Image (cartoon, rainbow, N blue to C red; front, side):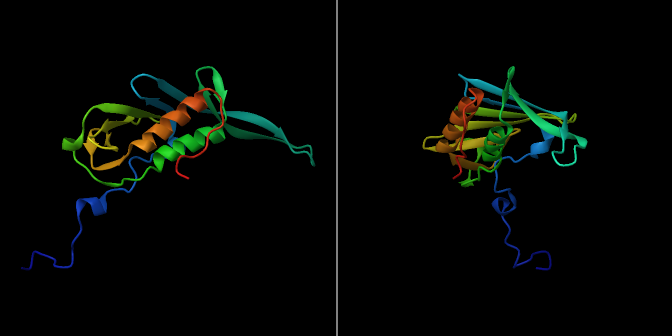
Length: 168
């Protein structure tokens, strides 16, 4: 018929992002991860520091990102690893809300602007798959090992330890 396009075979999963949730790094000022037992909140801000050029002696002001867990300053490079790991977890396949069991993990992203927080809740299934729900929407699954790695890194980072990417 004139209303159908035989060559158009796009499915919902073709249009879905390959990532669970990937906010802009520079837009997030608070990141909270929780597994129901432990919770880790990292606060991000910027501060101006004066830097003197060793050769010219000229002083300039630079903006530096500061990450804190409570009162303790955390190495921003390690925080970036944790943040990027969460942003780069890829969907492994399709899932629906019917696949969800109980919530095992959540991540809340707070933003610098008046944008509402984003919450990603992760639900167990009857296998090693985990179903993420982004602001109430479900469309894919990931693996529990990803969540275990993220939570282990959040704990280590909160203790001021070095972390490595879980994504290899």
